[in-house]
Length: 316
Image (cartoon, rainbow, N blue to C red):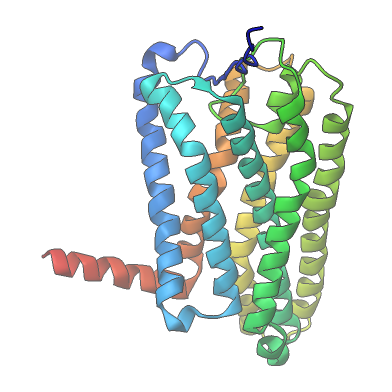
């Protein structure tokens, strides 16, 4: 008897900007520029912190982790987004889609964890400045970084693994030019109760809990700062937190926005809003973080200026 091969799983279809397919190549220009500036900004941050020994401090180690996370998110989504817009390459195999989804959601939790670690860094620096270096040793910073990675990479496995086993007999068209778990699971012809419930619990225990702890740490920081007699010293202490607060707001506002749109706006909002919000979610924090830190952090700003002026002098 003939051996029949198992059927090849049909690929998913990614979606660009619905109704604007004719001008996708024009839309790709701003996307290409945004990706370029994300890679340049975060790559420069990473390079400066790696090479400049005066930046080998806990605050900058955490900033390097943030830049590395943003680079990871960008490199995970860039091939499919530009593939759809530039080459009309909409097909993506199921395995590649699930893998991309895994890394997008993992890196989002890593970013939340790094922002929490940075809040802890600012808390120690302002509450107990004399003990800062003895508390945040290099080994402790490394342990915090490993803890953030472990939490993120392990917590996303349970909802992603079932995606490999689900049958997909409905439409294979996804809402974005990249794969998100909440988008893929809706195409499954199976009981997806676990995949609906687990992410809600996970969001509560990661994003929501991280945001609450960050808020609580800033209440304690503010209490400490208000106890400083000198107005100048108060302003100086608060100024060290401005960059971090800005990055926290940029990240959590985009996460909340995308969550609400996927949960409550499926039937009420235009598909363009879904696509736009999805792209803001993956592009806005990685684009803004290097800008925020290079503008608001004097040490980073001065070294960036020195680096680029040196390059210009060499070119001249």
